[in-house]
Length: 180
Image (cartoon, rainbow, N blue to C red):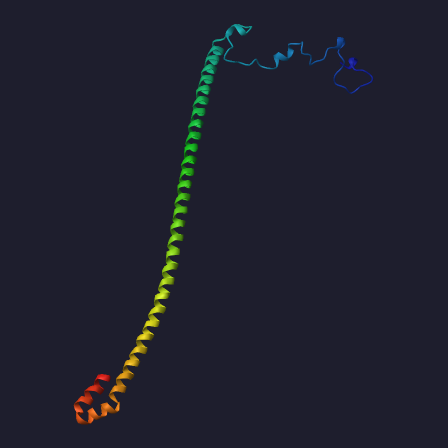
């Protein structure tokens, strides 16, 4: 190997091969020795160059069974995911419907509240008006009562009433008691 080294590259571990051959040439089947042949479901005993081995047949059938299990599991998982998406979609649709119902109910309650607030303000205004009216009527009643009392005192203490009082003491006492 040392004799094959070129003087231009004394430290190169690879020497140039004759006829342009490189160790990584694709025409060589030597790399097949280092990489195992993949086993697939379509592989059969005739694909192998050596005699069929019964353990390899068992491995191939178990591989086919594993592939079948994987396929069924994959189909089951897809179906489960589809059902899950459908449930999620139904749940979201139900939530949207509930949201819409709540919005409608909220709008109706807001309208009712506005109606009751308007009615309340109207009743408060009417109540204030009635209170002021009551105050005015009480004042009028008090004024009329004073006028009546004053008129009664005038009739009681007028000169014509004094003459009646002197003639009949009981009559004047009754008039005074009626006034009080």
